[in-house]
Image (cartoon, rainbow, N blue to C red; front, top):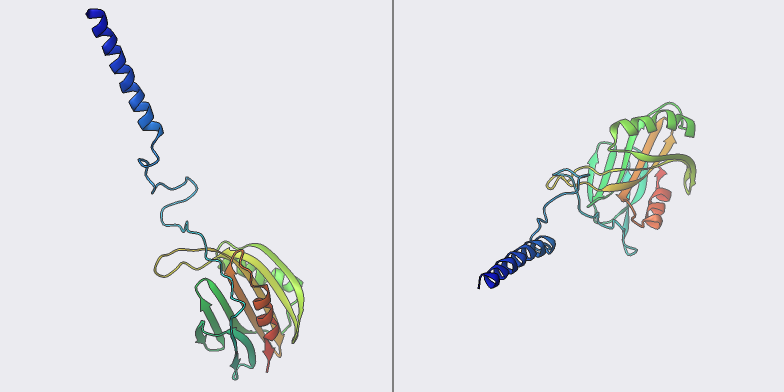
Length: 203
């Protein structure tokens, strides 16, 4: 009897150990889903960015700034904000902006690298992959800056996404127009961005 009782005790202990091991390894439903990877910090945006693609069916309207002498095609229905000579069109994380400044000389690739790019890197959010080139468009020449950056934090959620940016500089009679187009990285807006850039015209 004593031998049998000892065997039962050993068997019971072995089953208890086995139960603990199985419970620890099969924790798919028992682990916390709120833990963050070590490379992230609470409060940062970890969601996937929206595609940012402008639909092929997107309608465009011509925006004209009569007082400041320029016009361009802009996506119809996007939220528009006018601030003096400047205008901005926004749709979620996609955007188009024209900003005017006064300058005495036309920009060159070299001058843009020495000034605008440095200003951009200082004022922008994690600006990377900067490239500068001259670009001939339908209504004249321009200087094109391409780069990636973080978006502005969402006013409600504080979320950010990684953006691709095309920045065109147009000069005319002492005025420098900066046309910036941006969208979540990986978006396919080649045709739509080309249309807007080629539509810019001094009037």
